Structure formats: structure tokens, C-alpha cells
Image (cartoon, rainbow, N blue to C red; front, side):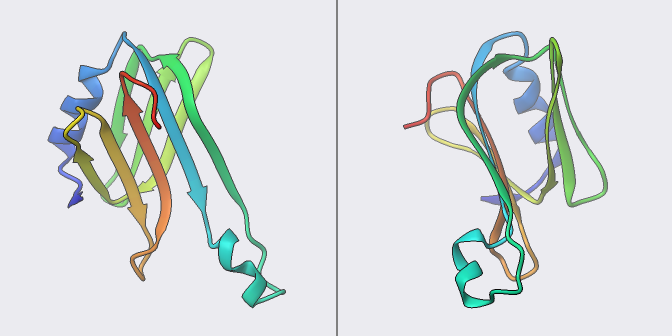
Length: 115
């Protein structure tokens, strides 16, 4: 993955606009390691292969970035995006890594379901 280049990410987001796409959205703050420190409160969110059509998308901020998808009844957004990739399957993969390089948030968009 490469550090975010706003113009490239925005162009990729616009390329999926008004199409049926599959979204993967995930956040974590270390839920898998919370057993190492009982006083640490872990939380996260996960959704995979949500089929949506968005009418507008925007990446904003100075970095880390916020990325939002405007769907008919609301918004899907991810905050803390630092890196991106358009993979060999044409999927847009966005990730936010914390200061130690660990994944904190992922937002992925594809015209086909994620496996």
C-alpha cells in the first residue's frame, strides 16, 4: 500500500459512483490482544460485502483522512485513512495504520464480493 494521494483516491471513489458495489468496513483498536491487559477496553466494527450504491464520495482532511460514501438514506465513512491501493482486481483498498503501523481501520470497495 502507498500513502494516500488524495487526487488518486478521489478518482477511484468517483469511478464506483452510481454502481452497485460491495463494501468492507472494519475498525479495531486491538481487540485481539485485549487479553494481555484486562484494564484495556477494546472495541471494533466489522461489515463485509454490504451491497450499496453511493451517489457521492469524498476524501477529506490533511491526513489521516476521512472518507465518506453518501448512500440514499445516510452515510458510510471511515476516519483515520493513511494508505491506499488499487489491486489487480480493480478494488479500492483504503487503510488507516496507527503510529506503530498496526491496522486501525479499513474501507474497501469492489464491484464483486470479497472472498
